[in-house]
Length: 184
Image (cartoon, rainbow, N blue to C red; front, side):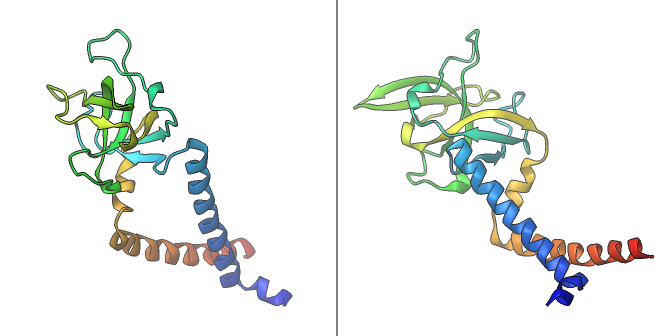
């Protein structure tokens, strides 16, 4: 039994298993810590330029009480919160159609909060108000340039199937290679 752990391929497989478990633990830990289903999002459009660029990775924190979201017009002295929300025009919650815009106004109707939003680069506010239950969270840290493109790639199962196998083969090939160089 001890000999099995001396095999480079077994060691590589165990390391790969540890890496996969660590990634899942990190992801679910981040979701729990930030209290949102989508703690990391990529910026998909230029509607928030110059504040956010296309491809930026943003960190999103859930908002258990929507009244804590600061909303103010774009010309206010203090900028309001940037929120991430499902597209209210779709009528359903599609995780592939999240929008990142600034909250410029909030109103209460029938005991529910609604947000008027606008992208920093857009000339006017969005057409539809965002109901509080469509809000995923607010941006707490932003502008990790270009890393957000990875989130777009990993949204599709086909991309995962294209990216993951070469990555696994690379890890399997490299670790025994480095191990044999160290021994000589």
